[in-house]
Length: 181
Image 1 (cartoon, rainbow, N blue to C red):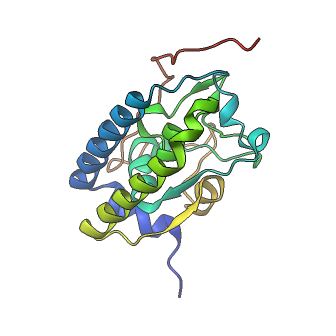
Image 2 (image 1 turned 45 degrees about the vertical axis):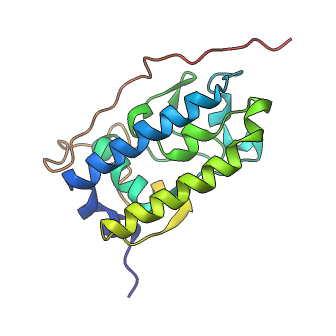
Image 3 (image 1 turned 90 degrees about the vertical axis):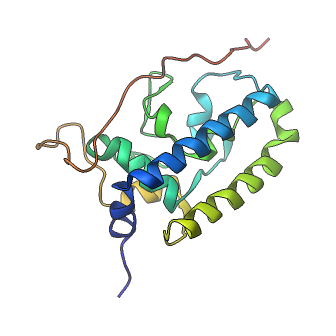
């Protein structure tokens, strides 16, 4: 019998040690990305994956961390083209967003470093999975949101889980925006 993705990650979403490791991973990743100096040219448009022919992939440790932060606020994707956490051009999942969201920039200069950086960081995530005993799976983001069985609509009744507390908010940190000419 196959274990569902939701059953696979939910116990790990409750682990403080794994959450702390993921916070550290994302802090280091964000610093590494900032050192490359990417520029956001069309704020929010890159979250419309279909427009770029882009599919975002995530690992099980990323999903566990994401669920920890958004368990009661997970949104069901309504299309395969746009992330359900982008609202009005802003990211409502900024703190817990996956690595692919952090690395992908439509800035043409970013193409020189994105793939190599992504692969290096993916190896780090594989190591975190192994170190924390999390079964490794690399899966497409929209499908993963559906497959976890944890996505809820905004009108879903019931209080947030006591074990997994939500923290949803609008991205308060704007990226530099360059106007297209």
